[in-house]
Image 1 (cartoon, rainbow, N blue to C red):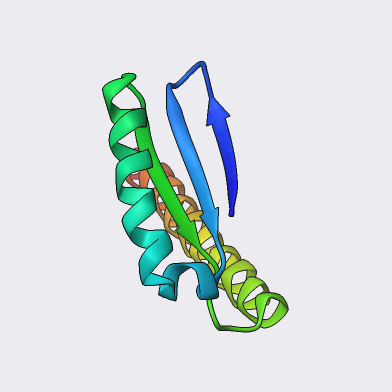
Image 2 (cartoon, rainbow, N blue to C red; image 1 turned 180 degrees about the horizontal axis):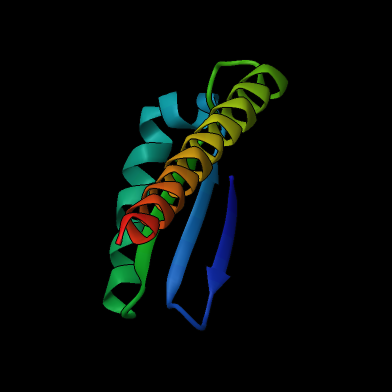
Length: 90
């Protein structure tokens, strides 16, 4: 487990492995630790490692993001063309 504290935003980030997430004893201890951080005025955010392949999932995410940006660019270009066409008709 790793703890990262962001003082500016008052957030305590807990990073757990899959094994740590499955450990019931550790989870009970963490509940008390989470309460302590919340009492100090921090938000608690817990990240758990996944079971997927990081490289493959990252590639898929990047491809998806490029597709979203490309669709947005096409839509904006279409709006400009439509606007220019409408102005030319006047």
